Image (cartoon, rainbow, N blue to C red; front, top):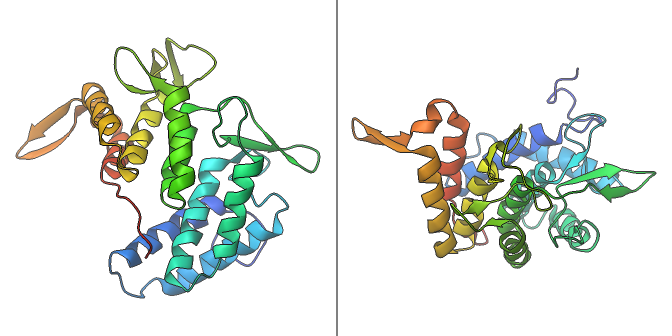
Length: 262
């Protein structure tokens, strides 16, 4: 196993590790942070840009010999986008190239949504079927931080194809099948095909794209599922006693904001 930071000048992907750190640093700078992490930030974005451009698909696997997970790649594109806004457009060409190929090559024809996963298939990448509600909602959220027009188109497709229309409002995990009760490592416990992760990520889309009507419906679902409790003047979801990451993600999504050029 290679330490990602020791291998920063190498050729292994490490895209998810690099991208999340770079994204956090970009946000730190957006809110007025100093240059404390600049050297790491420059190195990470340079390494990501180089490796993405070296790939004939402009995509890298999160894990060796696995699928390309588009939501993971989008974290890298968000980080490079933020960097380009902060440093006179550097790496903007890579961001634009990736978005254009996404629009033209990686759209699932059945749903109109950006692919959830791609697979290396005889020197080309093929879309893995089917699209997933959790991945698609997360894709929409990341796109809202980069390209609002593309994000809006994807968001409308998400609501058309994956919106849960009965019992409680939310995002379904599966478009082409029904899952009354199940569990998925990414989506969480699935009840009546409702995706906890997809619904939480959709709160971020609705917030960033200022769809307050659907956002309100999603937050009601989050309340029903999470059950807010208050203790010593502080509130949190009761469910977070078992799923703390869910509370953290929901907080991040509900406090997202429309992006303006930095």
